[in-house]
Length: 129
Image 1 (cartoon, rainbow, N blue to C red):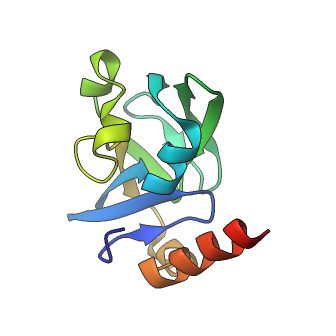
Image 2 (cartoon, rainbow, N blue to C red; image 1 turned 180 degrees about the horizontal axis):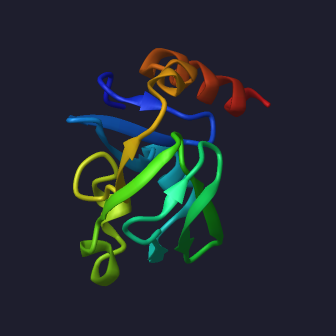
């Protein structure tokens, strides 16, 4: 798991792109639990989202799962490649399988996200339950 990303307890990751833009995706752990992706329902560009709101749906051969926005902001881009190739979320969850980008409205929310080490600890706790 990339150490330069921040993670939500709901298994989304964020990566700063500069100029207040952040890329959002789901973690390798989340995609492996879901299985082979068959469809990703992404938010619309210009949608306003609040941290913790469900804003996308990842549908796999096993189940459909909500994807939550880790931050409050405005969607500025979506990964249109996922329309024809949703399996990118499985094969490259931290790269080509990104979901959407947003500009955030409250930098303080970044402090509520987990670093890679804390996220790994969360996964260990979940695995032991």
